[in-house]
Every structure is written in structure tokens, then in C-alpha cells.
Image (spheres, one colour):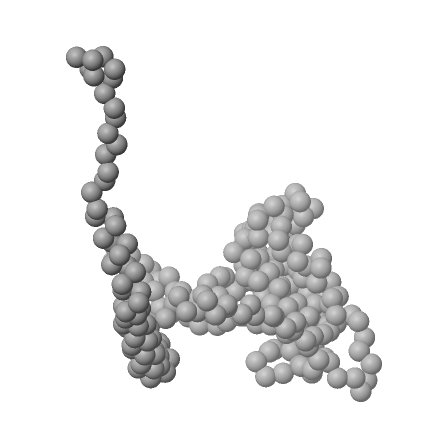
Length: 261
């Protein structure tokens, strides 16, 4: 397939690759050789331990003047933490791609390889003539699903669950109004109030006219009350004259002694 050193049909395999990794391509190629042909679950556990430096990695190539490891039965090996972390990251990407395409949960690592990508010239410091080039590497992994897919069946990715968006209440939206929106809202509110005030203005003159008519009736009633009949006036005058008459004082008789004197 284009972009990979192995030939396979992309529709039936899960793939992943990473470019321009700042790791040694020799270490990365040895790590990929240890997981090639293994189950993906076992490879994930192995790479996690190797990236933490808990177990060594067997070197079959690029092992000149390399020390022997007791954990490997006396064979040559190293602890490539950086390379193991980069390969683990690529493997997790391939697993995620396979699951998103609905290929199942179990996979076999059909192909895993690492090669040199770019070389950037570098010179040793302090004016030395020695060169120390900066080299990058690329990693590619191809997974084969263990759960067989029948022929004629299209593999589709699982549908995503619809997320229910929480609607913001109208009261909260009103609080975040911009100044321009607030002015426009106030202008509309003022126009609405003027519309409601117009019928009151038309009703005011009618109330005034009713009030004036009530006052005229009240004045006519007062004038009618002040008009008195002549016969009633004569009776009122007589009663008034009797009230102003001087009171009569009773004369008591003198005692008998005073009469004898």
C-alpha cells in the first residue's frame, strides 16, 4: 500500500504511522521486531514496561559491543525507553483506528517497522571537526482483526450518541444584552407605553364634563335649599323674638320679722 513498506488491502486492516520522530531508528527497529507477529494486548503491556525501563529489549541487530543481560538469558539487549514510548503511541493509534471502523477489539500485529526519515547536518561544539548529524525516524504498524468479517458485509463506524444541548433560559439571555440591544429594547418599550396612554387622554375630557355637570347640580340644590317660603319666615321670626325677651324674675315675699319692723 502507498505510504507503507508492506502490501495489504486497507479495507481489511487497521493502520497507523508516525513521521519525523526524534528517536534512534535503530532502537525503534529493534522494538518493532519484538512485537511483530504478537497479539496487540500483549504488545501494549510489553511496551508499557519497556518505556518505563523495567524490562530490557532484545537486540538482534545493531548490537556490536553490546552488554549481555541476565533477564534475557545472557543475550544482548538494552533499555530503549524513548523508542518504546514512540512505538506504543503509534500502536494505540492503530487500535483506535480499527475500533472506530468497527473491526472489533482483538488484533494481531501483522506488520511493524521503523526506518530512517531525515538527516540534518550538525557540527560538534567548540570548533571540533567531528560531525553529529540529527536523524529522525518513521514508524508504521498494520493490525489484522482476529474477528473474521464475512464477505459482502460493509464495515461501518459506530454512530455517535447525540448530545442534548441545554437551552439557556430567556431570563438569563436578557441579562447579557449589549448596550445597543438594551437601548433598542427601551425605545420599543417607550413606544408601547405611548400607545397605551392615548386612550386615557381621550377619556379624560369625558370625566371632566361629568364632574362639571355634577357641580352644577350641586349648586342648584344649594340655591333651592336657601329659598324659604314667606310663611316659614314669619314663624322663624316669632321664635327668634321670644328667645330675645328678658327673663321674668320671681319676687319672693319678705320674711315675717321684716314686716313687723
